[in-house]
Length: 392
Image (cartoon, rainbow, N blue to C red; front, side):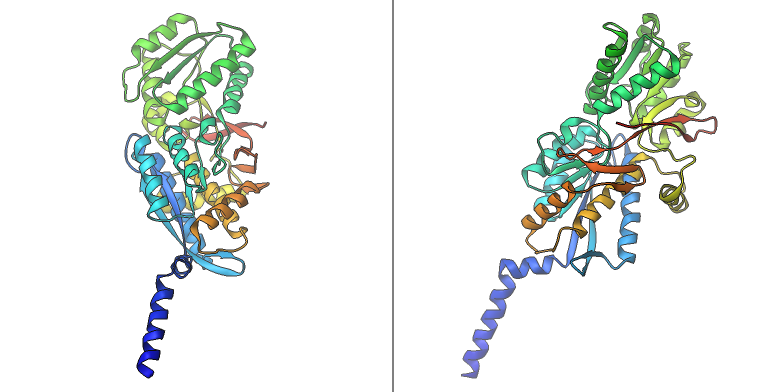
C-alpha cells in the first residue's frame, strides 16, 4: 500500500512539473526583456549607447529588488542580440528572442532599416516592441504591438524645413541622402515635400543620392554647388556626416549644412572635428545645458562610460522606462507568455504624460508618441548645445 501510494505521489509530482501551467509559473519568476541593437556593423556606437543605457537601467531595477507587479517583485534579465546593422540580422534576432528566449517585450532595433522589418516579426508574434530611434512611419504603421520612443519623419521633415527657412532665409535647398537606407530616404522625401510646400515646386534644386558604404561624394557635391543651392540637408549617420561635410568644404562650400537626429552620436564630432562646428541638426535632446533628471542621467553615464551619452542612449533609457511602467501596471503576471505579452502591449497603449529625459510622451493609437523636437547647435567646443524647441 505504501509503495502504491508513493508511486501515485511520484507520478503526480512528475505530471505537475511537466504541465504547461507549472512550467510557465516557473518561468514567470524572471522577466526577460530583449534588446535588438547594432553592436557590430556600420554604426557600432549606436549599439554601444543602446547597451550601456540598458545596463544602467538594469542596475536600477536590480537595486530596487526587481520589477514590482501586483505587490510581487520579479527579477529581470536582458537578452541582448547583435543585429549587425543589417535588416536580416534584426529579423533573426527578434525571431530568436521571441520563440527561444521568450522575452516579454523588445527594445530596439534603433535604425529604421532594421526596425521596419523587425517590427513586422514582433507584430506577427504578438510581442510588444518599442523602437527608441526609428522615425520612419512604417515601423509602427498597422502594427498594434509596435511602439516608438521618438518623433516621426513626417514631423521632423517640416521641422527642419521651417527652421532653415527662418534661420537662414534660404529659398533654394539641396538634399544628399542614402537611397538604399529606409531612414535617410524617407526623411529626404518628407523634407523635400515640406520645403516645396513653403518655397514652391523646384525649390529643391538638387536631390542627390548615393548608396550605403559609398565614401566619395565629390560628384554629388559638385552638382549641388553648381545648382545654386543655399543650404544642404543631409539626414545621414555619423560615419557618413564627417565625410560629406569635410568633402563639401574641400570643394569650397561655405554655406549651411543641416542634419537630422541621426547626427546625434558623439562620433559625429569625433570624426568630423571643427568642420562640423556651428552646424545645426534636429534631435531628441541636447546634452549641453541639460537640467533635472536629464542632467542626472548624463552625469551618471559620462562618469561610468567616459563620454556624454547621445540621443540613442537617452531614447533607450526612456523606452525601457516606458516598458517598465507598462509591466508594472499590467495587473498581474500569469506566467503564460502570450497572455503576458498582450497585457504589456495593452498597458503600453495606455501610457500618458510619461516624463522622459527626452521629453514628455503620450502614445497615439498608432503607438507613436506626441512629443517635441529639439534643434541642436554644435558649438565651438564640439558640444551638442540646445538651440530651440519645436513642438507639434
